[in-house]
Length: 348
Ligand code: BGC
Image (cartoon, helix red, strand yellow):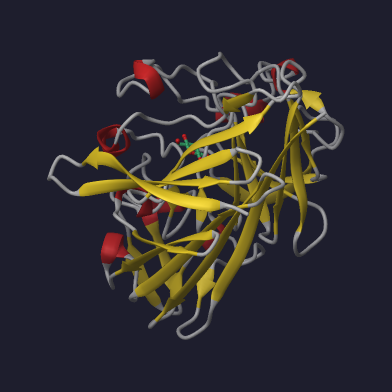
């Protein structure tokens, strides 16, 4: 049985009050989520000796989340990841977005879903967050109403259930940008974590981390995580994909379809494990290459350094709108967007 309690989490610079919700299960493990950006602020789960530790990067107050530009913990929308040339077409109509990543659009624009206030409600054991993204917001068509349900179960499963509907044809590709460190946030980098990704293929990126449309085998490359590998083992290989990404920053194509295991992470040091399941087509493994030691300071006033967290963002393939061979993140008027991602925490 999970209990949800609400606390104050400070204010934004314009005085808006931000709340924090603690989802605590019967074992005492808990997850904290805030209504600004719908961000996961903490994930406190046991190591192999039963000691609780916080494995999510984050900030001490609302202003940290307002200032940050690394999307730490946040919900991402209306379109997670990149859209080439910051424009796309639906039918014959062309839509233009802000270029917030070179010439491209990244993670929903200048003020994406990570920088808005969500309306939070507790519904039994779920925390329900709602946001209405107005027609034209960040250049996207249609009034998109989004509902994200967070749940944290007694067996330490954090599930994120994404639902959306729009009154016009639009694009919709929602994800969460939590940075995990199974040794505990603030304890150094994630290079010693063992990673397994259940994907025999990945989408080849260019120097801007934009998929070119080509889907290649991981076999024989440092992106082959079909058997577990320590992240640091090959991250500095002079492989073009790693040079382009400044490390791992790639979309993988998990084998199979529907709800399935996509990735497993393990820290030998603490014994913590994390499994990621989703029904989405892709997963971005990002090794926190751009966490570049800049303010705002993270939890406890400590500056966050390079590769101190890793992201596993479930998604439609990036830049799919420019590659019709990829599943399209198009949500038609009146249709329902519904996807689910589960992060399961354990030890071994
Ligand atoms: C992207 C990275 C980007 C990061 C921003 C990730 O999802 O793949 O390229 O730098 O988000 O924090």
